Amino acid sequence: MSIRVPTVKKLDQTVVNRIAAGEVIQRPSNALKELIENSLDAGSTKIDVQVKDGGLKLLQIQDNGHGIRKEDMAIVCERFTTSKLNRFEDLTGIATHGFRGEALASISHVAHVMITTKIADSPCAYKALYSDGKLIPAKPGQSADPKACAGNNGTQIIAEDLFYNVPTRKKAFKSISEEYNRILDIVSRYAIHNSGVSFTCIKKGSNVPDVKTSTGATIVENIRLLHGSVASELLSIDREFDSLGFKMTGYISNANYSVKKMTFLLFINHRSVENSSIKRAIENIYAMLLPKGAHPFVYLSLEIDPKNVDVNVHPTKKEVHFLHEDRITGAVCDAFQEALENANHSRTFYTQT
Ligand code: ADP
Ligand code: MG
Image 1: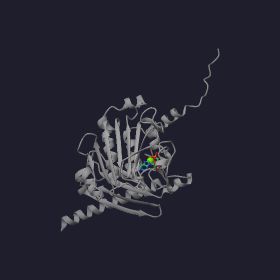
Image 2: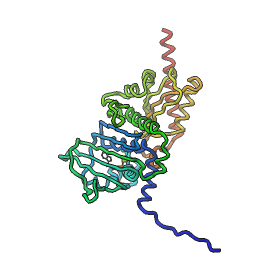
Image 3: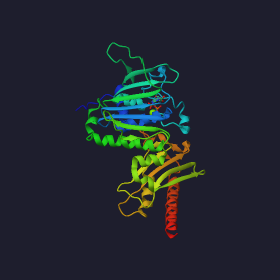
Image 4: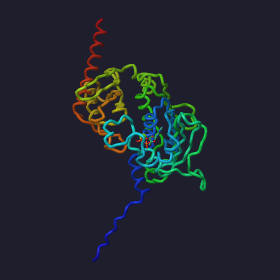
């Protein structure tokens, strides 16, 4: 009996790109995180987000950053096109959120994208439509080139019908409100971390924003706005460890405060990330202070020497690895413990006088 041996073929480029896009953009909130980071990289001080159907129908972001040159508009949505990285070695000193040049490309492979952008030197804005990484005409037969239009300095990116061409992914989203909550979560995190930047997030058609911060507000004011009364129960953390090449700042709830589920806003080198070992260590500290089932609020920003951080472990950059992880986690624990103990002492001190 002869066995049929399948032939090996190279995948079509569009298929490759769509598979890759699915890794970077798993849900609307991932796409929005990338777009927010691009706006921040562009030096924006105002970022306005509009969303329809949890971001699946529409994600729109408007910023007042440096904009994109007209000449670059043809390639911004191609894979691996970036203004932020030249050489592999530069990864060790990367100071921007982005560097892979994959976000816009990925979004354009799973959504209809429109970019309108104006740089300060240009008398007008330019608008272009994209599909599968490339410029496309607004109507068949028309030119795909960016068109001059009116607009303010900065960039507006609209992504519509997310996953229109990935039906299995699209079907997997059971709840629009859950997707919207994830979007609000990501906007709130970046709004708290970037207190010099004003953020709004609104459902398209509504006139009441669900997130609205102002440029002059402090981190604590933004925490109050977005997380309420915990803002009155915060201890400040601010420590630098030269030997480990890292610095931590943050605000953590004191032992008087607790919630049913831990709120953990973690930033490593200004990117919102997750790190289960740091999270577990912090939970253990609070477990000794809080009643069973009670959890803290923690906003923690770690700035780690970029040469000790590997941001390139996952396409979404959600997970990062860094050198001296155990020692850094230990240092975080010490700082928390000290802050919580000091607060405790000052409380007993006040009650005694
Ligand atoms: P990366 O951020 O990794 O460079 P992206 O695909 O996210 O890759 O973006 C590609 C490029 O498009 C960026 O390097 C930047 O030059 C430009 N760009 C994207 N978004 C904006 C924005 N909001 N303002 C200005 N430039 C932008
Ligand atoms: Mg980017």
